[in-house]
Image 1 (cartoon, rainbow, N blue to C red):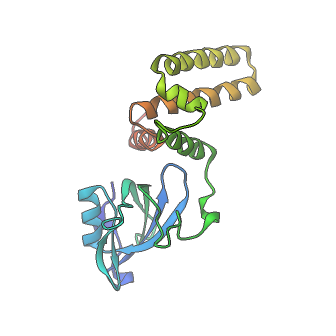
Image 2 (image 1 turned 90 degrees about the vertical axis):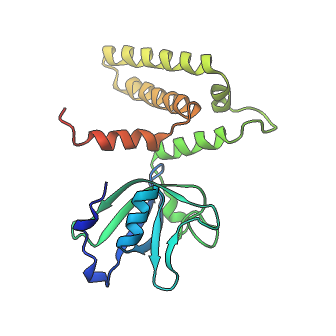
Amino acid sequence: MLDIDKLEFTKGNGLVTVVAQDSRTGALLMVAHADREALERTIATGEMHYRSRTRGLWHKGETSGNVQRVVSLSADCDGDAVLARVIPAGPACHTGSQSCFGDDALDVTAIGALDATIAKRAAENGAVGTKSYTRRLLDDRNLRLKKIGEEAAELVTACADGDLERACEETADVIYHSLVALRAVGGSLADVETVLTRRRGERR
């Protein structure tokens, strides 16, 4: 986690710039400022707090419910800016937009977009209409676990055969079915990234 004592607050008159990014999709959400107190509150609560020059200390989403749950906080090389990777509960912008930078900032990685789609399907529980394949998997424990096994076996076969194209396709299938199974037990891509981030410093 972020070492606040190593940040350079003096250049910004007691503030550092904070860039908030959706950890699931990579989308740029907003830019704000924080002082030591805001960052201490952020670390203590696990939700983003900022310092506004006009509003003072504020908890993102305190009134709207659009909180930002912290996944990681990283300082830049100069120590005067922080990248906050978060899971937003709703729009970041006061206009109601997902990003303060418009739709162009919502360009996402393919795997992030996949996880977001799975989350959307998970939220459709009980909705009227034709069930998607993802929704079928979420509703059927045996089916989703069976599919993980099948896709993993097909990946092993493709790799054994040295078939690169098929191995890539089967890897994509394994990732998809794994993310669905993870979502069914309350997890997400962001949780996996948290584990990978924690392991990054471990000797392999």
